[in-house]
Length: 367
Image 1 (cartoon, rainbow, N blue to C red):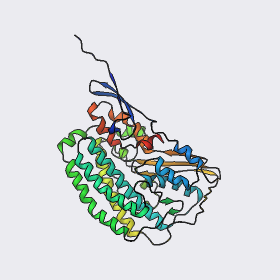
Image 2 (image 1 turned 90 degrees about the vertical axis):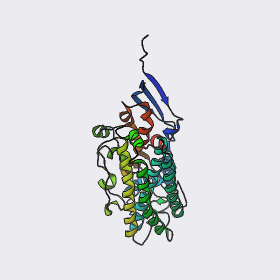
Image 3 (image 1 turned 60 degrees about the vertical axis):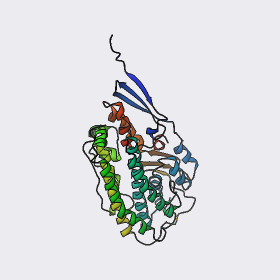
């Protein structure tokens, strides 16, 4: 009797817990081998870009907070406000620029901790999940003390920030910075030299450099494939042109390389945070900007380096108090496109490990 050899079409999601959102993967299998993996999106579409055309520039700060990547609200605010401020010729005071830089790097650490904890949990390392969320809780406490919010902040405003940092807050941040490298080492001891972990991720889900370029991959996904590009270095904004930090890269392009890049990014973020606190000047925290901001006619594109990669905002103004058109270049969307290349040729058991290292957020993908 001949063996049946036809390919199997497997639907993974959109309710599967390891997709971290409503993502559907249509996986074509030949036995246990992945022939193709095609992502289907749109289950979380919110029309946030269209909604922004009907709200003022100030109201839209709260909208980008919630309507895009919900793990990096401050990064969303930054990209949007850079476009608003550059088109409107609004000069942000030096202290506000340094505060923004400090907050953005704390947000980067917080986002990477969520990634590491949930990815570790997906591949069986539950302890890592508990440890990462222990440190993230401290960061959320710091965000709450400074902004009043733990997940959505509406802290950046046109021309600066909403309010100054509370007394003693930077000392608490420095205490975190003193302790956090030891925790990173703790994560590394649990994972980096663990033979079970290495068997799951080393050499798995390879994204070659040329494929990463062709597919528009960005952020840690691209840098793990040998692409040394970081918007903070290439097109500095806020105080990034005045601080020293390295851009971590790896050449292997596999799951393990993406893990190593993000681990080193957290160390570099601590380095930037220390410099921001040491060099932060006194002075105003917000330029004198009217509540009903009106931008001149024109268009502009602003780009930033969010924890997930190259986050851009294209803004068109017709001279009113709200955008005529606004389009977001979302890093999660770009990296999702590379998933098929990462998964093709591997085993069905590798899907979760590979998907996790893409670090996508579905509200950032669908919008």
